[in-house]
Amino acid sequence: MTDWIGIGGLDARGATQFRVLQCIRDAGEISRTDIARALDSSPATVTAACGALLESGLICEVERAPSDTVQRGRPRIMLRINGGAFHVAGMKIARQAILVMIVDSQGEEIGTYTSPLAESQMPAEVLVGEVRKALEAACQSCNLPMTSIAGLTLGLPGFLNGSTGFMHWSSSVTERNVDFAPLFRRNLPCPTFLDNDANLVAKAEHLFGAGRGLRNFLVVTVEHGVGMGIVLDGELYRGERGCGAEFGHTKVQIEGAVCQCGQRGCLEAYVGDYAMVRDAATGRQGHGPTSIPEILEAARTGDTLCQDVLERASQFLGVALANLVNLFDPEHIVLARSRPPFGPPYPEIMLEALRRNTVQVDAPLPEITVRNLDESMWAKGAAAHGIEMVSILKIRAQGVVDAA
Ligand SMILES: [Zn+2]
Image (cartoon, rainbow, N blue to C red; front, side):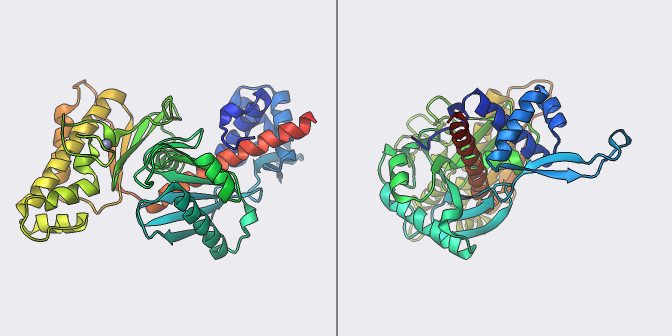
């Protein structure tokens, strides 16, 4: 049996249970009648699905006093997620640390933990060892036994297939083409899943942030590299091989600057942190700035090389965002970055490039939110993904019990 399943791994009955579970999760607390109404499903189908979910311990019943005169005297039986059903851990593999968040099955945060990394790039096997160490330390700091963690999702930058666990390339890993599934099975105590980190931020924004209630929006992350998560029609879009949405590696210059992926002219080879630090040091006598805050400070005090680097990055990002608007026509773009904000004149340079290059129609541009990337959003999105995957595993296991 493989742990690598998605909703596609469920049979028809399991898929109905999963839809009912999501409906209960969205509502917080809801009656069977209201679930049937919301899903346009028959009461018998909903009752059967709720029975199975109650048996697997994923949901529980609560009695509420009657809220209206029609039901006077009869308590209403409501359903909610059973927060004590299991715990999951979400992790973001960052450059200098692994960020861990442990949540319960309701998504309530139990605790967070940061496990430092000595290297920003390492062999896959070593990385999985670091993940195990981070999990152990996080459990210890939350006073939880490791056995209470029912699942773990890792967010990694790069090209990877979240439904198989196959990684084509990542800036965090020294090898290319790694099948993580057997490595996880050998080294980690619970089912472990993998997804692109920008996809997980999009998931967190959709569930908890600026994307709440939106059907079509994009999240662009700008840090060491540039990532993107696409939500279309309320669903995360992953592409056929699970490696679409590589906005950072869209080409903005023929035979342009060298990118960390090995190709030339990629967007992130101009706007990623590593590219800006590299460009700010080129053609300079003596030491140049070695970080984004130093580049910003040098530009502010009149360093023209740093000013040029910031101006060019802002222009490239504006043009690239215009391409996104032209392609997707989203309701909203969240531009999330971990670096300090670029002060004037750079945001205006970016917006001007965006306006100039967007196809003109008689409708306003999508809303664009520029915000500091709340570090916890990465791990929070990973934890939300873990809850979904563990729920699917439990629904599937209950189906096997029922069939026997
Ligand atoms: Zn690239």
